[in-house]
Every structure is written in structure tokens, then in C-alpha cells.
Length: 214
Length: 230
Image (tube, rainbow over all chains, first blue to last red; front, side, top):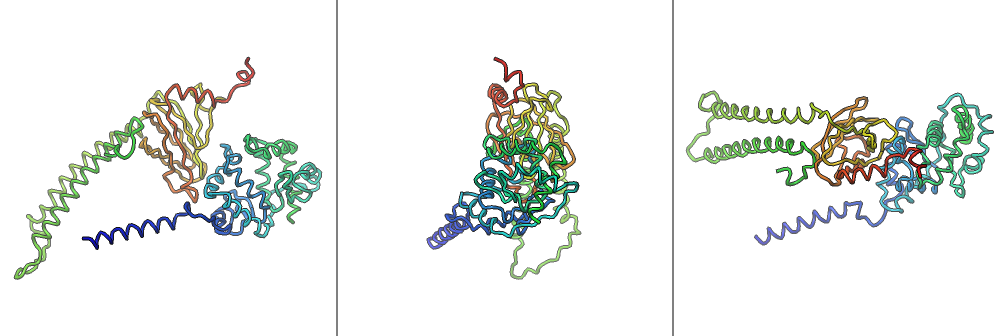
């Protein structure tokens, strides 16, 4: 009986050790950005090029600070918790995979290192010349060429798809984004989005932003 | 039996458990009986020196009776199971109690949106309270839910209520439940709905009438008149 009991103890110990070693929760070191990014590819595409079919915007080449900031906003509920923000609600649970700050930083760095996406125009009816005039106030935060400005928390716009820009402006105008008390940058953008008084103005300014990518 | 492992927190949880237990007991009885007979025969008719194996075709009446009579008895058991199951099905799925409070449940990849009626007890009025992944209920009140999906199939499952209902895109599915126990319980999606399926848990908070009224007063959108009143 004694050898059998020893064998049982050994088997139980082996199973326990296997469970511990396989558990990502107990892993001390965060995975690499590339490893974490494998999850993001499910919606954002293999190189972060985005996928309009699932309303996932292109993210490749976005500034590291901006990606990390948005991920943290999702984590705190500052973004993606409005009942009408269906795309945000989809993103919100995904950040639960990011267990520590190191996970956020690693994946943000990886995304920033990906070649920037050149989006194709899908919106019609926008006039980039008219949009150039409308873009004036936007440049104060987002930069003259939509490159994004960390000091003003202005998101980089270059590389984003027009359908995503349109949807985002609509959300800001409707208070679906930028209305959470924790989202102070969003609150600023919400006010600025009101400058674009109608659909045509939105399309015009987006047509101008698209010239940055091209 | 099941209640030993999971709370019964709705008015029909015990009825559903009864059906599950009934099925378990009857199937368990036949399983152990058949296994016993089977192993008895294996032992009784094991290989013995000087005894030649026999090929049994199952055409002799005395042999067929070993299948025929148990089969009839199993069918009798089925009648009991069907009677119990239909009774519960009608109560839980077919008849919604007339006096009820509506609540809207919207599923999507990968979140639950719960729209609670405000103090007026009706949906689609300005005092509705919308919450993400949080459902607030009052004990011993009948709720009629309107379940829908914005994208793919989901399944609204509250194990302690013994409630599990598919949400199908394009349809509004109605049903009911009556929470009977105060507490905080799990809501889960029980239909594989994509990569975030395992990440869309929600919570149901079942509160006493006083607590629920307090919660409602705190969260119901205030009218302009109420805000500006001295």
C-alpha cells in the first residue's frame, strides 16, 4: 500500500505543479506586447489594420501614449460604458485580459511599432477643401497633420478610417462618448464636436483628415 | 439534491429542481439496476472449463423478456417525467403572471444592458434606469423581461433563478421570474457568442423593497423640476 500511496501523492503534486505553471494569473512577468496583441488581432486584424465588419478601427502605428491611455480608460469605465456605445461595450471586456500596467504598456508599445495603416476612403460627399477650414480648431489639439499631441491629449487621427472618425464624432455629439465624469479629455472633445453642426460638416472635415494618410 | 449545491432564489427554482431530481433518480435507478444485472451475468456466465460458449440470437421469448419488460417500465417512468416537465414548462415558459413589472434585457458582444423601469413602473419613460452589467430587482416581485440581442445569439442565464433563455437577433423574447431571496448573484451568457463570451458576466442584485426604493431614488434620472426644487 505504501508505494501506491506515494505514487498518488506524486501524481497529485505533478497535477498541481502543472496547473500552477500553466496559470497566466500567477505568472510574474507580463507577456510580450506581441503575445498580447494576438488577442487584439481577432477584431483589429492581423496587423492592426482594422475591420469595418466588426466596427474595429485600425490601430497600427498609433502613438504608444494614446493606445495606453485608451486602454486604461476602458479599464476604469471612463470609455465604453455607455449603453448606446455598442462598439465600446465590445472593447470593454477585452481589456480585462490586461492584468497589470505592464500588460497595457507592452501591448501599447507593440501597437505603436506596427506599420501605420493607410485607410481607404469609404465615405462619399465630403469636400476636403471645405474641411480644411473646419479643421482649424481641431489642429490645436490633434496637430496640423493629425499627428496627435500628447500635451493636449489630442488623439492621432492619421491612419484612422473615415467610417470610424464619422462614428466617433457622432458619439461625441450624442454624448455617447465623453460624457463619463472620468473622461475629462472626452468631455473636451464632446464640446469641440459640436462645432461640426451637421452631417456635411462632419464629412468635409473627415475628407480633410483622410488627406493626412494619403 | 441540487439545492445543496446552488441556492434556489426564484419562485420556480424548486419546481425545476424537482424535475431535474426526478430525472436523476429514475435514470439513476435504471442505470444501477441494469449495471448490476449486467455485471451479475458477466460473473455468472464467465468462462468455465468444459462449458462451450453459446451464441444467443435473442429470439427466445424468455430472453426477450429481459428487454421487453424493463422497456415498458422505462416508458412508464417517461410518462412521470413528461407530466412533471410539461407542468413546469407551462408554468415557467407559457404563462406570464398578469401583474408584473417590466425589465428590458439587451445582450450584445460582450455586455448586458439592463433597462429598469423608474418609479412609474413602466419602460420607455424618462425615469427609466439603464445599467450595464447590473440588474437590480426587488424580492417577491414578478418581473416580465423583454430579452433581445443586438448582434449574435446569446443566452441570459441566472443559475440561482434556474433561468436560462436564448436571446436571438431580431426577436424580442418575453418571459418572467420572481426573485425570492435577497442577495447578489451571477448572470452569465450561456451561448457561445465569440471571443469575449467568457468575459461578459453581470450581476443581479436582489434587494428588499426598502433597499430597492432607495436604489431607485438614487439612480432614477431626475426631472428638471425635481433638480431645481428647493
